[in-house]
Length: 288
Ligand code: ADP
Ligand code: MG
Image (cartoon, rainbow, N blue to C red; front, side, top):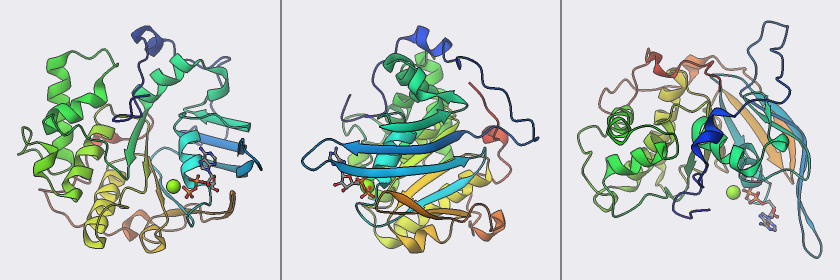
């Protein structure tokens, strides 16, 4: 795996077209949209003396358009869970489905293709290439998708606009603040219009005001229809999101589901920094 870009190992382009569920999973008949992500009775034990039971049987589903916080103290299993949700790792037992597809039934190449087309990642450390321009960093999110270079650049410019950086496409990450770097990383996660964005401690390297502005951006993207799971140990940030899954010692100890109305997330309307709330480019329901 490329450490600068851990979400992109190198799938064959043919694998992109072969991401199908085997057998196809029927749409639920209760009229509800199919979850983007389903985690069922998942455990993950790391080998060692003694073995570490990082996840001890967790279950939940994320529906299209949800914004979910996974919150818990250090060591509670959040990053392990993110790796399983992002198909970067496989569970010891239990099932993970992305857009209805059982991860266990897929080859490593198919999983790499699934990641490249369906999942956007945001990490605490940003993982930007310091020597590339912002637009090239964002266009990297479209590697392995078969999209032509000129189109990759156009889509990257568009994604930079979504995070308020449309005017600086040729800057380098070294010229940016931490908050701006994380915006670039978010643009890279969004550029392929993934079914779900997974963010692991996206504010962990930022001061609290900058962290709050990144959470506001995620709120604006949620309003535009993007499905997002944010992992954080910061309860005050998590408390502002519509749904919280609380973890402790590898278990889910609470899941609020959707109890707060979407309007409860206050997102300042700042055309320079946020996605328009009626942006239809990210309406949920995109399927592989
Ligand atoms: P969090 O992200 O909530 O801090 P982690 O998922 O990183 O939690 O870790 C959960 C537990 O699993 C911790 O006890 C941690 O030390 C352990 N752990 C995480 N990754 C590994 C690994 N690769 N090998 C062994 N133990 C690990
Ligand atoms: Mg962690």
